[in-house]
Image 1 (tube, one colour):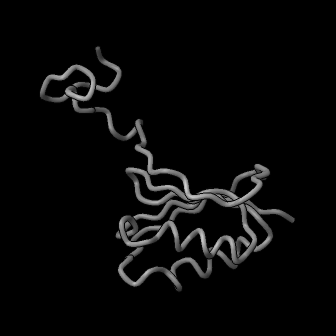
Image 2 (cartoon, helix red, strand yellow):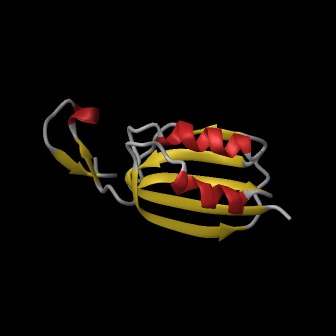
Length: 116
């Protein structure tokens, strides 16, 4: 039986080698999906037969400079990923309503996301 989950980790999990660690652990257990940094922390969408072992080992073998303060696990239906990947960091736009205006208009200050 293939299992899938979305795992969100908060704490000191960015800039400490956490995504490469997750990748190596997932590959060793023949799991598929992805890991990415978000504004919330680290998000892992992962599936495979050894998911329970992955979840058990995740905090035990984590990088020495990391510190997990919160773990959220959401079971999901199978997706059918072909491999495991590290995805480029992304901003969760639903959590960050403002962006720097000079990025688009050459000005200074802040603007509400989606505003002209």
